[in-house]
Amino acid sequence: MKRSYVQTTRARSAELTGERILDAAHARFAVADYDDVTLDQVAADAGVTVQTVLRRFASKEGVVGALSDRIRAQVLAQRGEAPVGDLAGAVANLVEHYELEGGLVLHLLRQELRVPAYAEVTAGGRRLHADWCAQVFAPWLDGLGGADRRRRTAQVVAICDVHTWSLLRRQEGLSRRQTELAIGELLTGVLT
Image (cartoon, rainbow, N blue to C red):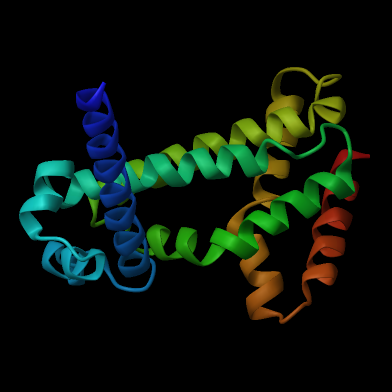
């Protein structure tokens, strides 16, 4: 019985070490350009050696991949709470997501053309976003077919894009509530 306890304790310790590494990586990658983040910095921030980071994730790209998986799971959980067919509820969910992760998303998008690891992340994010829009706004899209449905879906995806949120919230300085109202009004104009 003692051996099982030791293995469980070791497994939990390894899991916590991995989480610390990902937390440290998230903090670094969220504010610095990819090329400026080193595994030495991530390891030091996590309180481990670079060898531990490499043993766990194999490379810098491996750290980004694991971090992307973790954030994707969080995004899926949060965005999955959006009520289908409830425009105001869906917009509130969307804006909540951007308030939490919009800065990071924009940071990755600025670098995607020169950082292949980020290009994979942003491509996955685009698919997730398009799927979310098609699901949440299905009651307004289901009656359409062919080119009309494709165009309308593309309009919804564009209105709900992180760049739209950034323009309203950051560039124009709207409050969170006013940003929700503005996105809702844009959607209402397209969906009705």
